Length: 131
Image 1 (tube, one colour):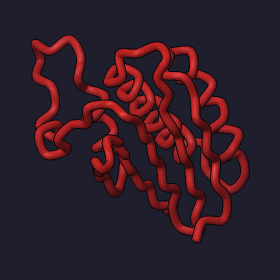
Image 2 (tube, one colour; image 1 turned 180 degrees about the vertical axis):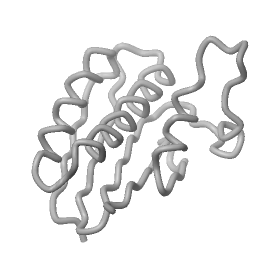
Image 3 (spheres, rainbow, N blue to C red; image 1 turned 90 degrees about the vertical axis):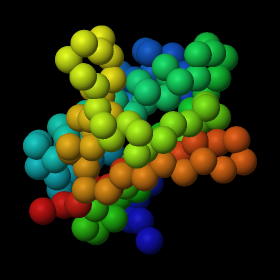
Image 4 (cartoon, rainbow, N blue to C red; image 1 turned 45 degrees about the horizontal axis):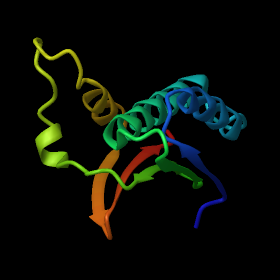
């Protein structure tokens, strides 16, 4: 059971990414090293940017949830976008690709990663363990 939860439902617009980064840093202010906060904030930023790009609709919304547990922080980004295959996207971008490196960065930073698609919603879940 989490000790604290941050949940924000926001419009799928790029200015929200900065707001969510600031909310993440405020949420993690106590008890976390700057390195852990930086890693987690980068993961939040990349996942939220992916959600915005997937939705292609300025009227769409997505949800960010951070669950603070004793030994880990769980990040969830949920939207009603088309989803993607986690296995396919683990291959990463090649040198010729203009985009596509964000998910590879996320995969390098997190301890657990999953994508669930149900009832027309996609939820990307990542876990970072406290050391």
